[in-house]
Length: 453
Image (cartoon, rainbow, N blue to C red):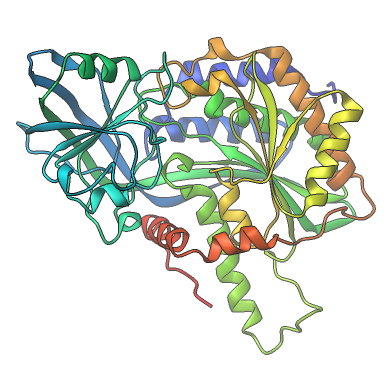
């Protein structure tokens, strides 16, 4: 069997995940079917995979409706933000007000009791400054022309503290423009969803290191999708790349342990990766509290996690490759140098990539997040994130780049080339109060307690 990364093999995995299984919302049977599929792939390569269940909120959409009643424009296509507040069955009716951001004077007492049509505020941005003025509901407008309503993430009530959630819907820029030009004045918003606790899952499989088995590099990405959409680029393609890399390294072997992972519930605050990292942190805390533990000599499993490689949003025919660095500058320089050598350009960035990497670097494990960026990312979290966006050639290009990167750093290197250190700006973010609130809320969602110093 070939030891070269095969783009067609990866593509076939995407077909299974995004077409045959389809939408993989956290805690659903389809998410579990996808986890089982990856488990079977890992096992077929001679690995010994393991599936871990964890508690997670399993929210389901029952009804989302936006009706413009003055003037009578009728129903506007929309999607709700899971976890936002439900309305009564008949909905809530109120005056519309268009605002162009989340700071004063765009928002203020004038929005109290109104349905706020929020323009110019990216999906997922902090809306606490809007909520403090007690709007009746929020209608969030797409930021790009031609994009469909966005389903996006579950909102965590605790992350909105000290304010309460309100009903939230997403609509397109074009529909918002039609409402504005028609001088829409009054609307009825209906949002109904269920909120139940259930189980999500993640699956891991190790290629055990031949010389340094205790040293671990994790290569992971999330297997779930947002409601209704196939999630071909986000993130069936990332998981497919992980599965194909696992096939290659199961044959080639590695000096260090390579742990391949497909996480559940990333779209709901990174539940799978957070569960995994929280277990390591608890174990680390308990072991270091033991009087037999010798600081500077003994190491915990968390200490031995050298790096996390996150693959999230890959495979688009048109776009450009990006790598977000949650570690020292030398990591990004290595990515750039290898890009020049292999002719696979990467835009190296140091801003936060909002995915499973956050759980790792917040626990002190440096992370690299590889993604393919560009126009097609406008269709993330929409019904347009389909297999049609995927290119076998692009899968093969990034797969072979990652094969070389992992081989030279973790699998074949006599010394691991990167320091296990998080830069000061990322450490400052971890200590930020709003970040702490979000992490505590997410931990609560998976039934875990914060491990305060």
